[in-house]
Length: 351
Image (cartoon, rainbow, N blue to C red; front, side):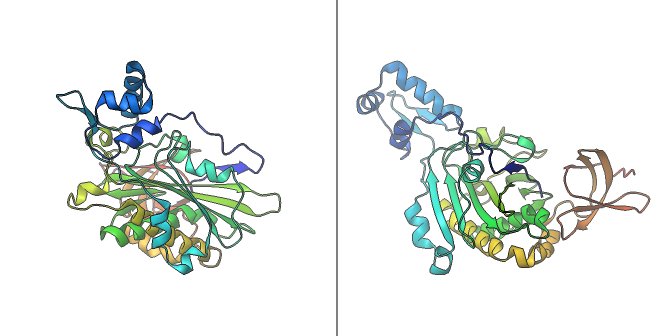
């Protein structure tokens, strides 16, 4: 499992500086034409101030269109995720498993927000959803960002009284749960890439980040974050990922879809409640076969970068501990628990 351990006493919830001019964004979110003069009057802004705030919004990846009459609009309206819609869609058995749920317009990181708070009540999850993250992160501290309202940034936390066996495979199980949730809403079967990438058409659709905090009582507070691109402006999508084949979003694969982000959030929450509620007993086992079938690295020659150096081999599956199993050209197999993988196009396998 790709994870960072955070001590119980650390300032895990430290927030980045706020960057969204929320009052202006809420006015523009409907995607309609708005008079600059009228916006200045409504928001009590000077001419320079409103231009500065428009630049701030564009810096987040939002596309703002200026019309011939100098009015302006967002290129795409934003359909905000509403907590009321999520709560009304969750049926009773899932609602009773929720300790708390928050929706933030802007937060540094949903993972750090939850890690910095109290653990949830035993047997329940805490949930944080953000429209925009100022310090979203992927594996190994890499930046992860998307424009406001363009995707899903959702984290859940769970308390284990004692660290369960197989916890190293939790991020893989979360990936499989996310895959199921996406299929629930879109009928799209996505691929998975070890250890925590969500893939479609060989491009990155999203990712998983699992972190934990050891508690003084010997238990552990685990937070799993999921980021999914839903409808991202083309120009931003082209630059948002260092993945070899670039980034993808869900709307690109069925333009006629009107993807309800609240419905996707509900599906993710339900699948994660199922996962965490059973993980201490079942571990990765219920998800392993699905992972093997969806894993784009199966049978591929790869180069793997670990903390101790490089390894080369052909992928031969995933262990119950979440380790990547590779075989070198001498027939020797190794299990790698953490690292970065690149597919070798020449299939020149070395030991």
